[in-house]
Length: 329
Image (cartoon, rainbow, N blue to C red; front, side):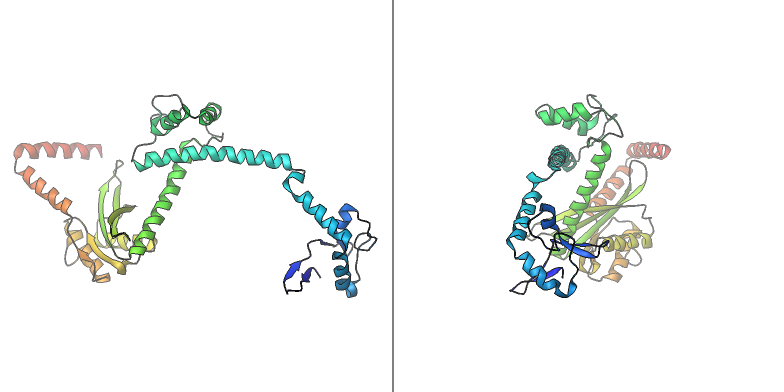
């Protein structure tokens, strides 16, 4: 009963038909609201003659009074006719305001991140000369942007608990979102090119936590070879099996098929370059087509070390530097 079949076979819902569970009858909502001149059960006490319902509904919905009521309801449904129009307008204004704030914040973050510049300083206060590049950039934009200048005056140094979208928490969140988007595009490009090579190396960060840098190299559709940083892997271990698992798990986590890999490049350490039990040998067991190429930068580094060790003064100097590093660690 709540559906109507048109002449062309299309089925539409009788949205005007309203059922009352307490009375067990149906009403014509628009006609009852606008009090049309129709004196039918659908408008007055409710209709429950289910045997003749289909024919009665068809007659009612084709009447002029019913159509006028539907048109009046449609007009009232427009934004200008809604009782909450002022609330909607206020909400739209609020949304547009914060959207304009976020546009400026995002562009600032993109500019700093694309150039590898640090974000934070010694404090997070607007007006301070030690507040870092992020807040400094916003202050610079505010000098030529009255909207942002007014926003900083109103919300700049209110602290936690106050929404401003200028804090380091929001900044870090946008950086993570950009990272996910960028990583998605890298994986998308890699899958289009299909074949790729990998290059990994580990080094301690400033907090002396070992980080494995994971790089991929592939050829774009334009024929241009590119090398992209994919991710860091924390504390992978230095054993051959641990490093091999780190490589395979990282590729799997990014939905990259290792069978499409055609090259691998590591340093000259035996756990990496060993032809029998090194990482390169274990990767070849998984995919025999992955050729190993020693890293030229590491090879050059070994040459430099040998040259420095041939000089006693240089050996003493670098030994002293190494001792200082170990003490600080």
